[in-house]
Image (cartoon, rainbow, N blue to C red; front, side, top):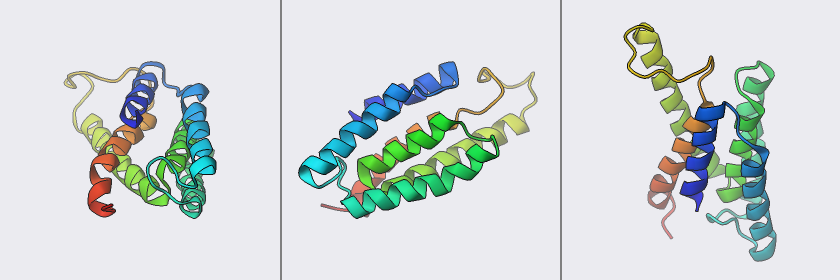
Length: 148
């Protein structure tokens, strides 16, 4: 379900350059409900880890939002990721997503507009899509970091 959600977020961010509130809000609501009901986030985070992840998500994305480099959907998406699994998932998702976004920026910078094979529409890089891919990568990496 998380992978389908992440792919939906990425598709919306690439196509429309915005992440709908029902996607991030719905995921966060379900995850917080699970946290309250069973005492653990759906991907294994404890309540203190989720709280730390929410704070870390704000710390990592709010400066970019205030400088108008990130959209509000990017901030809310990383906060929804925090509700899924806590601060470890936030760090992994942000690092993988940022590396992917940096690679795309380098690609666009390296190749002139005429030579780039397929350019993304619009002016800004869809960082929410990079975070979505980072989340999927984190899900593949998480069992190695935290074996159960």
